[in-house]
Length: 237
Image (tube, rainbow, N blue to C red; front, side, top):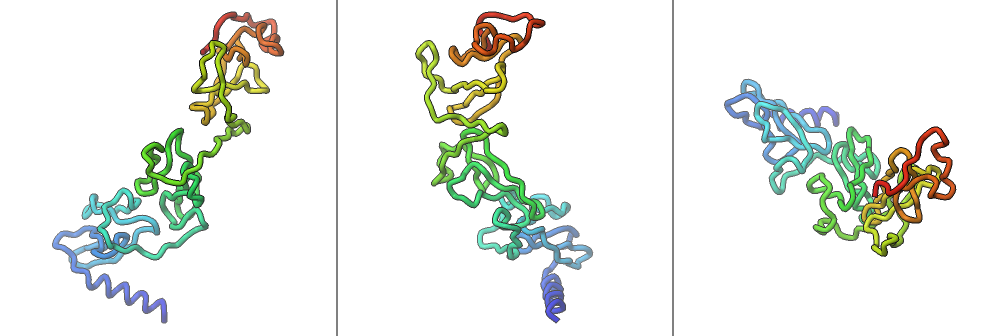
């Protein structure tokens, strides 16, 4: 009986909608994720997937639902009740902030209730209202706490100042990769690590903070073996 009542209500709502003269797809005047397929003056009520709204910019010829931040939805409009899938996905589709308000870097992409965790790039924070990462200095988010970025091998940038042999403080400190003489980490702005490496024939010298000949770096003298000729002098930096 309950299901029948729901079907009747849907039928009445569609019957009450007056289709325009031209066939096509038209959004409901009160609900942004509800629309009607009008054919020869008869309206069939339809609903976007939970979290999406009907895109009138492509209507009436194109039937298309998109993220709310991509569509102009009138103020005061309503949406269907949410169908959450865990704390990460308050709706089945969408881009959502991390549940920890101090974590402004990570965010969730939900598709059919399945979550994919994403992260903004260096100096950016996620803005749910635009669905994009924005510059942190615009203060579009408040209460953010910087979190160390950890590479898959477990390295994160030390919270320390590094000074070059010429006495200049480095904006982007460099640290050796312990298990590979040729590789080293560059910490962009002292916070965001990337793995880099010296050109072939050289190794990283953690004393001079530049690439160098293997014989000048204790413990790395035989890194290439005797078959490869070595290049002396300065490196990549």
